[in-house]
Image (cartoon, rainbow, N blue to C red; front, side):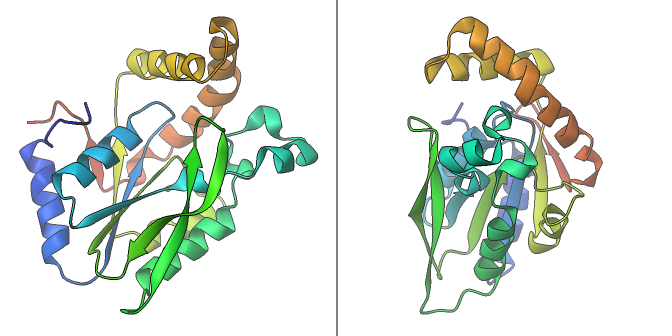
Length: 211
């Protein structure tokens, strides 16, 4: 899917953001397994000189910290991220000066850990695509995020496809089939319900099969 070109209706929206001038931030939100990273990567491939992707997952708390806090088994829930740090990064990206490089963290799935300073955002990059689960969440400080974004697209996908992808992803990174299914049921799906509840706040409902 990461080699797909966007349906025309979405291409026009990207072109409008790029033509607006200055720095623009586009948010991609959706439940776990919806394909946010796939869409972000497709955008970066289609507009390689104009788009930089920044994942919210870089703000996961470290596994050791989650263990200390007693939240390791809920990794992926809103309180397992450095939400204030994420908001601070978005503010920096909106106000980035011409001589400044902003470094953002990334998330390394093979380690299941964030990696600090892994993404360099140049001041000349006109569009930063921010992808993550909680861009529309109403709880503080997540409720500051949408105002810092020019548009938010909700990535929509059939439920059975999304869940199947999640189980496969967890198995790919080391869980047994049963452990993967249990994690999706007990951890990912409660988070998915919270994310879906905020769907109406999005500016755009994104589907790959749109006309």
